[in-house]
Amino acid sequence: MNTNGAPEPQLDDLYRELILDHYRHPRNKGHLDGSNAHAEGFNPLCGDEIELDLEVEHGIVQRMTFLGRGCSISQASASMMTEAVKGQSVAEARHLAESFRRLMTEPEAGVDPELGDLEAFQGVAKFPVRVKCATLAWRVLEDGLNEANSNHDETNEVKE
Amino acid sequence: MIDVEAVRKDFPLISHRQVHGVPLVYFDNAATTQKPRAVIDALVNYYETSNANIHRGVHKLAEEATAAYEESRAKVARHIKSPNGGHSVVFTRNTTESINLVANAWGRANLNPGDEIVLTVMEHHSNIIPWQLIARERGAKIRYVDIDDEGRLRRDEIESFIGPKTKLVSMVQASNVLGINPVREVAEMAHRYGALMLVDGAQAVPNMPVDVGDLGCDFYAFSGHKMAGPTGIGVLWARPEILEAMDPFLGGGEMISRVTLDGSTWNDIPWKFEAGTPNIADGIVLGAAVDYMQGLGMAEVREHEKSITDYAMKSLSAVPGVTIYGPPSAEERVGVVAFNYGDIHPHDLSQVLDQHGIAIRAGHHCAQPLMRRLDCVATARASFFVYNTRAEVDTFINALEDAGRYFEDTGLLPGTGAVGATEKMA
Image 1 (cartoon, rainbow over the protein chains, first blue to last red):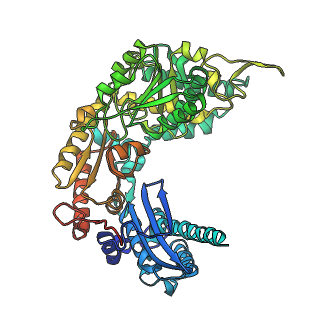
Image 2 (cartoon, helix red, strand yellow):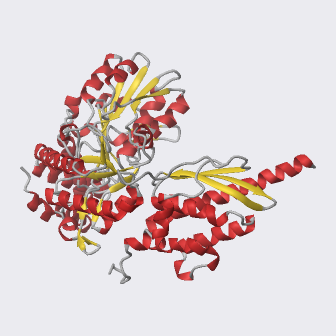
Image 3 (cartoon, chains in turn green, red):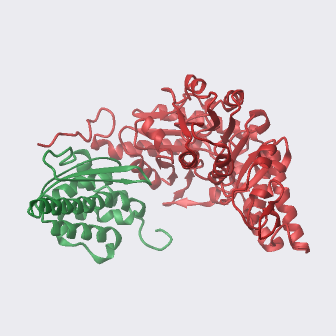
């Protein structure tokens, strides 16, 4: 028990099997040929790095890949995010990002069922210093979606 | 020899604190050290018995507080063997502020376009950013001395970089990641070309005897909180003639002699550089920390830490998959061992060690250029102080092996397969 009477968080809450699996075998890792948006982010406190390549067409995230270096939580989060977001509309992707942020910062509010496997990150909220590791990829995604959006606007302007 | 068991009793947090139900093993001393009872008592005692503003009140309390603050300055001066006593000792907030003071007050007046500042790739951000800011403003150029494969400064680069264009050389005496640098020789080289030498002593003063006169440097910066003292108080030592010639850094009360609406004249050194009400309490308490360290004896402190560091390096080397950064012998280090364990990220490692009550540092150690040079994102770091024991190192190694078992199926350890294969996505 810690000072506020809550049970001590256990390592297995943090390092769920699914998270370690994605860390060991990252999905969608690499550069993406034919991407139309790119974003990168950096966690200056610990040095985690994430880059995203996105292909957004007709308001749908058709494909997305990531590159990065950092701890298991940051890299597994990016890997699982690419799977969760692929095929989603930009609006759905933004909704997922918001739900994930709430999972980290307001764990008492419960898990949005839309998050699916991403619920594996629920335990990270018990380790406050690691929350930034988990949310880094999602912050970069928001930048990537904004860039895809503005690139789309520019393309339309040229057409007009 | 230091009586470690007696020393441990001096530090309430070290002797009593438990983390996750087990006794704390505190190996993050290069970040900040714990405080002995004498230091904690000195802080409480000051506020309970002598709190007053200093240097102006004509009453008993002000007189006591002023005397205690100036006595502390004299103790600090003796601690680093200042040839000019307290005259040369400016109180700042920390090492960072001390270096910023020099960059602003000396750099702005003395750096010109084309001038060069020589730093090293192993500097803490606090000895890089102030120079980048002032170099950009003044059109000066910064050159960074590289390290060799064992993490020592490259002597050939030091010799070739320091030349007629050099105005200042600034480097750590002891790195917070690697080892100890030959600052006395470098100061001689700098002086041959009329350049000044600043030494960042943040990791040296807590862990080894320091003699600023013998080093032959012009500026020496360090912090109180890494040497058993309080946070919020640091020191800039400088040769008095340089301090005399420098303009103030911050303006305000305390640092003036005569103020008129048209202009002002400055107080004598060192007070010229201490604008506003200073951190009186922590300044006084720093004197108590100096007393404590002097009571142990800095040569004894150095021997103790060398012995612990040597033991830790040997124990770590025996764990398959551990990479230690920096020079191979404890002789060339203060109590700092930066390492990585297979491909387990230092954050993940630190998280497992924390469950065993062990506090180490994981990250870039405010030395991002060095991390890039070492070709890693981050390292783990164990750093030792006067109260650490070999038994604690054993606990640490056991926990490290436990972390190895925890991550052994992940392919992060040698011989268990590669991680993070990168593929080109079509």
